[in-house]
Length: 437
Image (cartoon, rainbow, N blue to C red):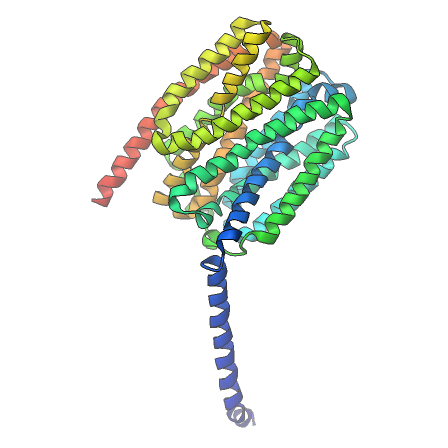
C-alpha cells in the first residue's frame, strides 16, 4: 500500500520538488540582490551615515560623564577622584569583553549580534539614567562598556561592503571621527546643561540618541553579508599572535593613555587650575572636540600616505605639548591654546593602527575581520582606562596640576613602541611578499 501511494503521488512529489527548487533559486537570487546591486547607492549612503551616527552615539554614552564630573561628585557624595572610575570602569569592561565577544560569537550571524548588542546598549543607557547611587551608576557604565566595543566592531565590518576599496580607510576615519563630535556634544553641551539646567538631562539625551540610532540601524543595514560565514575561536585567535598586532595594541595603551591622564579630568583642570568659568569651560571643550574631529579626519589621510611611520613623529610632538602644559601652570591663555593643540594630536594614532589590524586579518587571518575591527576600540579603551587611572592617582597624590608631566612621559613610551611596531609591520609585509613569489 505504501509503495502504491508513493507511486500514485510521484507526479505531485515531482511538482513539489520543482516548485521548491524554483523558489530556492529565486530566494537566493533575491538575497544576492539585497547584498549586491539592489543595495542602491542611496541605501549605501544611508547605511554609512547611520554607522557614523552609531560612532557618535557610542561616544556620547562614553564621554557624557566627563562634562558633568563636579555635579556627579556632589550628587552622589563622592570625591572627584572617584568620579574618574566611571570612565575607567567603562573602558576596562570595554577593553576586556570586546575581543572576548568577537572570539566567542564567530558562529553567529552578524545581524543577530547587531540586534543583541543594540538592545543591551540601550538598556545600559537606561540604567545610567535611573541610577539611584554611585554604585548603580558604576554598574550601568560597566554594562555600557561591555557591549559598546562589540557593537562598533560589528558595525565597522559593514564598511567594506558599502564603499569602494579605495574609500574604506577614509570611511573608517569618518566613523571614528564621530567620537570627536561626541566630545563636542557630550562634554561641552553636558557641561552647559549641568550649569544651566540639570545634569541628569545629559544622560537622558544620551539614551534618546542611542534608541533612535539602534532602531534605524536595525531597519536599514543588510541582514546578510560577507562576514556571516562561521568562524571558530582558533581561526580568529591566530590574529592575536601577530607581533605587529600586539605592538599596535601597546601603542594605544600608552599613546591614548598619555592624553587621558589629562583629559580624564579636563573639566576640573580647566575650572580649578586655569580658573575659567563653567561657561568658558564648555566653550573650550567644544573647541577641543572640534580639534579632535580634525585630528580624526587627518588620521585617515595620514594612514593612506604614511601608515604607522607617522606615529614616530606624532608622539614626540604630543609629549612636548603635554610637557608645555605642565610648565605653563595656571597661565590661562597659553595653556588653553596648548589644550587645543593636544586635541589636534589626540586621534592621529587611530586609523593607521586599525588599517594595520584589518590588513593583517585580510592577508593572513581572513575569518578574523570582526576581531580585527574590534582591536582599535578595545585598545583605545585600554588606553583610556590606563590613562584615567593614572590621572586619578596623580590627582589624589601630587595634584591635578601635574597631569601634563605624567602624560608627556607616556607619550615618549608610545613613540618607542611605534618605532618598534613599524619595524615589525615592515618585516611581516616583506615576508608575505617573499612567500607570494
